[in-house]
Length: 94
Image (cartoon, rainbow, N blue to C red; front, side):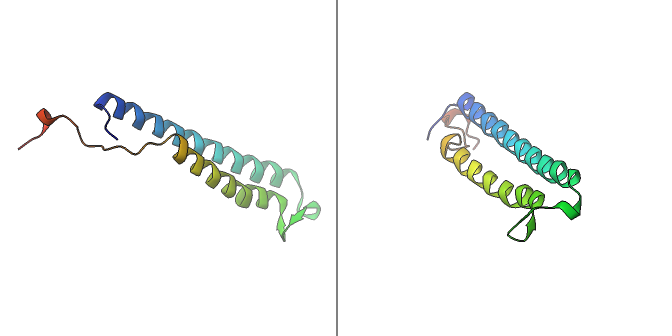
């Protein structure tokens, strides 16, 4: 895909911001399910899912799955395949 330099810079900034936002959401999910549920529940009262404590299952397993799905959606609908090189013939250095 051929984009002007301004459009390329705009697209790169948009992709970077979406990536940072997705990471921040993943971190918040991980933190609040891991420390929020895990710290609030004493080990004697843990609920287990597939042999794992619920807080760990939500934090690490479900969080990873949700993040993976979100990354696929992000790449499919937000990211664009474009050439990073300049399209201007005048800017080439010989």
